[in-house]
Image (cartoon, rainbow, N blue to C red; front, top):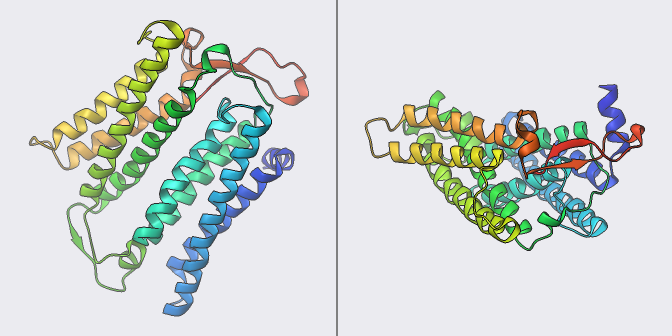
Length: 307
């Protein structure tokens, strides 16, 4: 706990404000679900939660823009930056969907996941500015990473919906005014169908990420595919999601497909967090040097995932 407080104290002030705003939005969304049964009061809390969520996302954007201006490059070279960028992409998507659909539960889950990402960023806190290696100094850098993060965001939503689909299978009618009706902003819901919709969107983004990555690799290394460990895991994950979508046309649609989608998200998490732990990490072109903790003074010698 003291270590996390120390990291928070050392963090950039826009990051601190972003973290505080997302925390307040999360608490407000929770309160909008559990407030006393006074409609007007709950509505006021809910409206405050939505404004806080939007304000947190704006601060998230400000943090990224400031970081990019200071570094003179797209602000997601280090693991710390990439987690903030995930909060920006995922948060922007969730703000848009929540404002259109008015789903309080989505606000709770979205803010919780973003806080998890930013909390991990705070723990890692590789906040020093790092310059891009020549291979990354390309116009493909920004679109490739952004497309992938859109894909990660979509399948993360699908992961949460998939868990709910296993808990509450099939199309379900909910009594007006009940907890779930308030939380979901609807009186009928089919978590399984929603899960597949988000998987389809994520599948398209992940495919586009593979295509832009291969095109970038052709310009940078004269080959579309190099069997890099992260490339391989990215392809494996995409193929698993392809299997999930194919299962929708077979007798294994429904719970088996949803369970496989949860496994697929585990592969996504491993692709993002686990590359630095593979024995083959030194062979990866997606692993770059970054500074160790600031008290060591040396800026060389520690490898970390780029995104």
